[in-house]
Image (tube, rainbow, N blue to C red):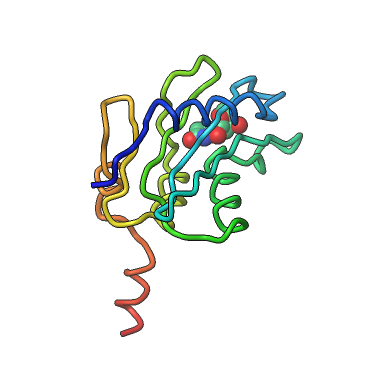
Length: 133
Ligand code: THU
C-alpha cells in the first residue's frame, strides 16, 4: 500500500479550505489528494447565488486533477472550517470513485477506509464496459 503523509495531505486540505468561496452556507470545505504519480491536487467548495449549482471541494479537486494531467487518486482527505475531517457527500464519493486507483484510501471520521468501503458495489466505468461487452 502507498505510504501516505496524512498530516501533510491534511495541511494542504486546510490551505485549500482557506480559499473556499462559501458565502451562503458559511461552511468552507477543503480537500486534498495524492495522485499515483506523486502529484498532490486540492480543491475547495465554490458556491453560487443559485444555490443548487454550487461546487463541492471534491468537484474542484477532480477538475484540478484532470487539468494538471489526469491520473488516478491513491489517497484523499477533506476538512471543514475547523480543520476537522469531513466525509465526502454521496455525489462526491461517486466523483472520487471514477478517478480512484484500486485500493484508494480516504481519511474518514472512522479511520482510514478504502474507496470500496465508502462506496460499496459502486456504479462506475467498469459497469459500462461490462454492459458494452
Ligand atoms: N460540501 C463539499 O464541498 N463537500 C462535501 O463533501 C460536503 C459538502 C460543501 C457544499 C456546500 O458548499 C457546503 O459544503 C455546505 O453544504
